[in-house]
Image (tube, rainbow, N blue to C red; front, side, top):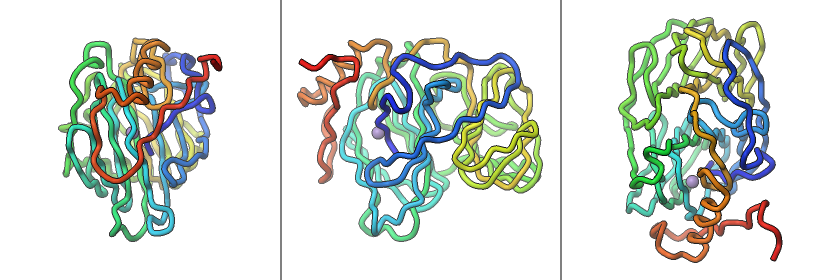
Length: 308
Ligand code: MN
């Protein structure tokens, strides 16, 4: 659920810019595995790196934690927030700030990497039943990306009744309801449970996208099924969603800074990412220590660095 990103997702420095105007650009997920759990990676794509500051969307599970437990050992992040949203089951987060936090459905974990943090994620031993959820990354802007790492757990988030849908606001605001979670740039994320046709009010200064987790939704007449991400462009003051689906609505102000993204890092240059990888592999203290029994994950050699 927690990366890593490689060239199969997107080259470190590519991606299409924001589209001005309403479009429906359907991107199919790439199936992969992270920490023993099946994942559908919806962002980044070669043709679409970001939506606002959203730069990574993994839909993980369904998995049976008794047969295929999640075991993601300690690994570092820089320059991003991780946003974890569990639909079923439970995940335990441990980080180099000393936080240990189980997360269950309806709750939000938000970790800010800033200049560097490390964490591990696993299903607890007592875990029974299905594991299903999402992990997303939000790129931090220049103003905060060199700052102090932090962690927030939000046990309750505001809900919105949209008629034939209920929405839970994870970050930002939707239809008058505001999340208490930290956001370093203007953005929105909402879990939407759809059972009909609803018109969702949107901020027209944002670009938006929809990650379909279950079911199927019609957007401007286009069918978008589970395992697809629909990029909606910028400038809409509403979107009509029609269908029966569980989906994540994402949006944000176009990011405005060109990012370089590789493995578990978001930066601005190859050199910066290599420095972070070297610091982690040397275990020089930059990223601190993560408690628990899982083995550290080593940073791979970057694809742009020639073999010595
Ligand atoms: Mn991670």
